[in-house]
Length: 212
Image 1 (spheres, rainbow, N blue to C red):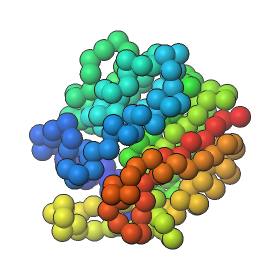
Image 2 (cartoon, one colour):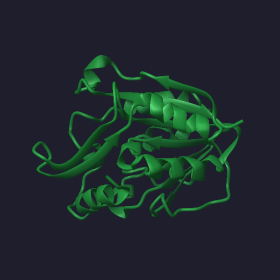
Image 3 (tube, one colour):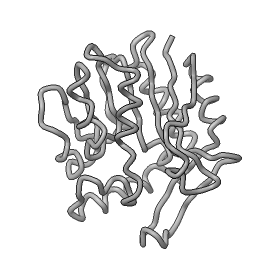
Image 4 (cartoon, helix red, strand yellow):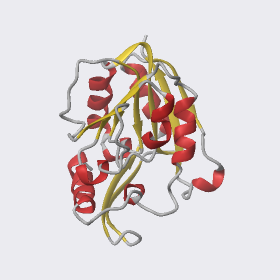
């Protein structure tokens, strides 16, 4: 599995007149109220945020009024058109693999996207954006991770009626990746109620990692 496979999936979705919640893949997976609440536990009105793969802004539209500024990077304008038009959010339509900024932020957030990168790719993404985290700032990642082992989904999905690709790495492996890249105070949080986790072999976690 490579990120280019996921980009084809989302590119097809973007060209098919998507709605605000299309990026959630299934109608039952919009947990963005809880995502927003978790981010706000680590933010205040002085917090600057770089949000990667922002989608339709389901999270950002809930938090922008409570932070200083958000830079939202989203490859597909068909999704980002749903992000609130406000001076507090700057939208950049670019693939996060190639986007670059020298600015630093209190928070760099990645929600619902890391499973669309394989291990080597996500190491490059974490390493790339570590430089954009201020000293003592945080990277916050929310995703679905393997419970006992890595779980790879690659091929046709009967539920979605299309090809779908995800790599749900074992949660401990993801924490080790961040540790090896020099992050400290790394913690995984179980932020959803049990009924939000549909599968026995994967689980949603939010990870907080601090740049020294």
